[in-house]
Amino acid sequence: MKRLIIALLTVSMWGTSSLFATTTDKVTEDSVAVIAQDEIKSWQKYLPKFKGTIRARYEYSPEIGKSRFQLRNARVGIFGNVTDNISYKAEIDFCDAGTILVADAYAKMSFIDHQYAITAGFQRLPISMDANRGPANYHFGNRSFVCKYVGNVRDVGVKLGYHPSKLPLNIEAGVFNGSENEYTSGKWFNTMIYVARANYTYYGLKAEVSALSQKPDQVRMNSFDFALSWNYRNFYLEAEYMNKHYTNDAFKTVHTYNIQTHYRIPFSKVLTHMLVQARWDSMTDYWNGRLVEGTEPGVFNHKNIIPGRDRLTVGVTFAHLKKFGAQFRINYEKYFYHDKTAAISDNDRDKILGELIVTF
Image 1 (cartoon, rainbow, N blue to C red):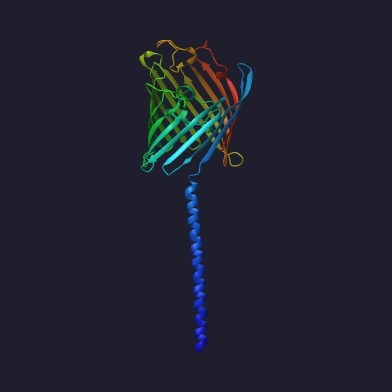
Image 2 (tube, rainbow, N blue to C red; image 1 turned 90 degrees about the vertical axis):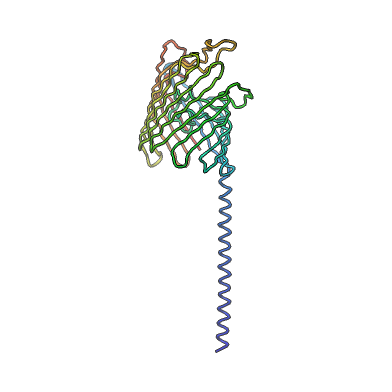
């Protein structure tokens, strides 16, 4: 009996030790696997990400009885983080209305819980609500006059940003070269571009104000912009006004504005939604501030003056925004020129356009 008890105890101890060893090995393997997954995730967030936009269209102008196909954008970009507080973005458009350009190339450093940021490099200046949309986010086939002419500025420089963690407020201010959309000019500048913007969001309402001062030639131009947008359920409304003043009355003050709206009709199968859209925008005569070479202020290069006009745009957009983005829009544009005798480009006449946009 004594021998039997000793034998049973020996077997039990051996089994327990074997089970403990197996369990310990299993726990160790699981821990290693979790650590490995965490390490993979930790460096995966620093891998570069890629994105792109292709925008192709067909246009017909009944005024001149002509039509054309166009590749408006073929934009590819890379962006990501090198640390939790340092990020970057580089974007090239291989066909921006027929030309190749660098859209963005900058680095950004955030600090104090990402409430403050410094962004340096080639970038769009923080002025205008509509001008700060990229091709993937345009509401219509053609940009508003505020965006296309008066507020369309990219340059090399630096801006500071403040975004408090407990407030839906964003403030930016920066200093940039006066090269206007040039990133490799190598020029020296007597004066630079100064710009600032602030916006505040309250539920679906967003208010924005911005200002810019620049002197591209001998005349300083000061721009002030006010914008308001409201998004309520499937309804969207946006209004923006920009005023550009030329010092010493070198040119009459430019006034430009746009009012746009759309209603979103959701779908559940092939398409995600449809937008029914309308926009009215207006601009008085606009001058880019550059003089005829070798002349004094007051002598203008009329090739740099854009005649004032109003425009009505109506259309629909069909969207599929799931694993990738695809949109097809149809727009009709009707122009009303303030001066009936003004020289008008064929690009700025009444037209019908159909456009396909794919984003990835």
